[in-house]
Image (cartoon, one colour):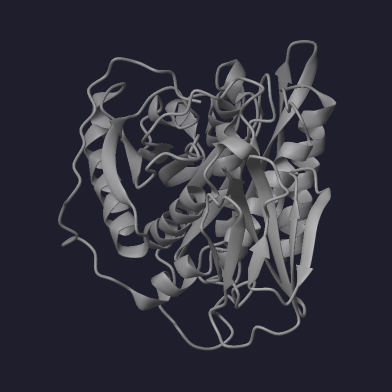
Amino acid sequence: MKKLTALLLIAISSHTINAQSFIQAYKNRADAVSQTDIITNLQEFASWGVKKTGTQANTDALNWLKNKYLSYGYTANQMVEDTFPYSNTTSKNLIITKQGTVYPNKYVIICGHFDTIAGSGVNDNGSGTSIILEAARILRTIPTEYSIKFIHFSGEEQGLLGSYHYVDNVVYQGSNRVLDIKMVFNLDQVGGVMGNNNNTIYCDQDMGGLPGNNAASATVTQELRNCTALYSPLQTAVDPAEDTDYIPFEEKGEIITGFFERIRSNFPHTVNDTFANTDPVYIYNIGKAAVGALQHFAVASTQTLGTLEPISKSTLESIKIYPNPAKDVINIEFPDSDVQNFSFEITDFEGRSLLKTTNKERVNISALTNGAYVGIIKRGDQNVIRKVIIAK
């Protein structure tokens, strides 16, 4: 998580996107981001508890990440564990490499940390972790000119230990730069707070540190803003780069940018950094922006037909559950006319079932108490998951 400082914030709600053109294939892939996947990943991330660097929970979370990538079709040969010392033990970063077609030895890095302190860290940084996973899922079969490294750092909360180790021992060996990096795109604390007007994302720009890479960072940060406008409904503002995992790269002269939530949550680093206190729709929209931007930075194929295109997890992703927050009744609206043979279930965040109905588009929830829940709709082999708020 970035430290809160008194640096100048440059907020611009409208800007030109002349530097980039809309690409339909990029939009298709950005739209393949699944809100169901985002929520599932956040729940699973939370289930590993406090993932403090050097603990068994941290190791369990790392193994969970590895299994996620294997389930997407990545191979063990594409994964590298970068071990670094911590206190009287060790911890590991996880690096997954997708090879580029034109510049296989030049890398776009998308990264974020998975370690937490004091709580499950769903915002800081389950939010960034879930987006990196979705980007990797969607782009696995998409050719990109530049190679992509999906990196999950540990040790961030103890002073960027994992990212410093990676930069000092993998990117550089002594004074020799052995890894050619095009740019670094970091995601940290992008979960928002449920109930806020979460319509704007900060795009981080290098305004300090080494002066030689500031101009290049300004360029890629503007490109990130452009992609956000092209491929998501979010507005953008610029935030000075601060203390998170792109800093070790910046200090070596690399080009950096990143996402950070615009309305800052007070829950990170507390036991209240939970799924209930995040805004999954905000994370979902940031995911769309991130997938659009990553394609731009890595120069993805523009092919729109054939097997190269990802398939969305479910045709029900555009389903509507309203009102939300709800009081006594929830309405379910399908994106098609087929409203038969479906079930709707409300559970708590630990998965305990509290209410279940069949083929009902209007559901009485008056027996449930105020709070945040998970709504699950199933139809055939498809399902969607949504966060449901009850406020009476």
